[in-house]
Length: 239
Image 1 (cartoon, helix red, strand yellow):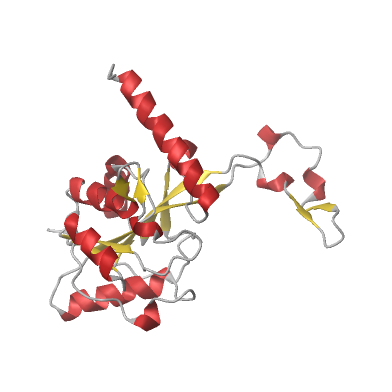
Image 2 (cartoon, helix red, strand yellow; image 1 turned 135 degrees about the vertical axis):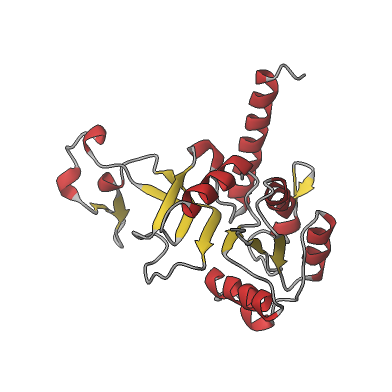
C-alpha cells in the first residue's frame, strides 16, 4: 500500500528577535533552504510545502525546490498562533484540493542540523507501529531533578531539594524536544499530547540540536555548524 507523505514547513515573515530569520544567510544559504533540501533529498515526500504569509520567503522556498500553493491567512500569522493551527490549515487545504495525505511531517524552518537519516528512521518506526507521532528529541545535559530557580528576592530555591545529595548517575535521564521534525499518522486517533504515550521519540545527539530564537542562539548555531563541517572534512581527508 502506498503511503502518501507530505512535509510542511511553517515559516511566517514576522520574526521579531532575528530579522527575516527564516531566510537570513546561514553559512552561504538561506536558513530555510537546509530544511527544504533535506526533506527533498530524503525521497519520503509526495510534496514539500512551505506555509508562509511572506512573499520573499515564498520566493526563496520555491527557488530551493519547495511548493507554496497558498498564502497563509493573516489570522494564522501572528505571534500567538500555534504550529498545530498552521499545520491543520495546510492539511485542510490539501484535502480540499484532492490531495491524499496519510502522514504529515512538520519540519521547522530553523533546523540547519536536520539529517535525512533521522527523518527516514522516524518514518520507518512510525509506519511499523500503532503510534500517532514520532518526533526529534535529545537528552538533557544536566539532571533536571537537581535544578533550581531564582526567587523574587534574588535567592536560590531547588525545585526538588530532596535530590541535592543524590549522584547524577542515580537520577533518571530526562529528554527535551529537539525542535526539528514531527511526524503524524493521520490515520491513527489519539487524544494524547505529542509528548505522550502515543508518540515515538527519535533521540538525536546533543551536538545536532540548537534552538535558534535569539541572536546569541544564531551565533552558537553558526559555530556548531562550522565545527561539524570541519570534523567531517578531517574525517574524509578534505582540505
